[in-house]
Image 1 (cartoon, rainbow, N blue to C red):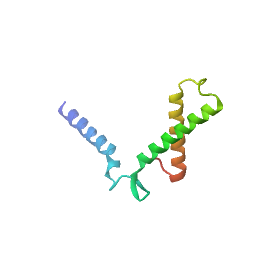
Image 2 (cartoon, rainbow, N blue to C red; image 1 turned 60 degrees about the horizontal axis):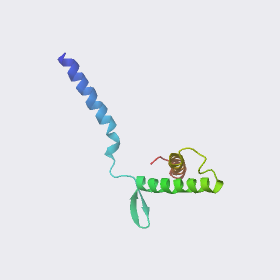
Image 3 (cartoon, rainbow, N blue to C red; image 1 turned 135 degrees about the vertical axis):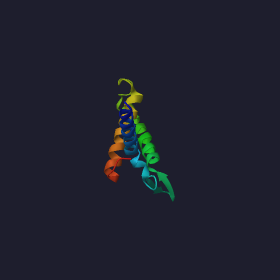
Image 4 (cartoon, rainbow, N blue to C red; image 1 turned 45 degrees about the vertical axis):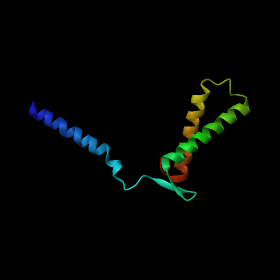
Length: 95
């Protein structure tokens, strides 16, 4: 009984150390923008928001705005997917 508890504790420590292995880099990924360092996630979030607004504008211009169900979820999810695709093709890696 005691050895089972010890093995379970070792497995939990090993799993936790593997999960935190990505946090050992010296700095967070960042990009120089207008002379300042911006974190990658912040640039991705700004791109996501801008693309969601563009998708909404296209929906309104096409006259499909009120006919599609859940327009907020549709615009946010399509903005996210477009931002993710652009980020991947521009930088070759995910944010």
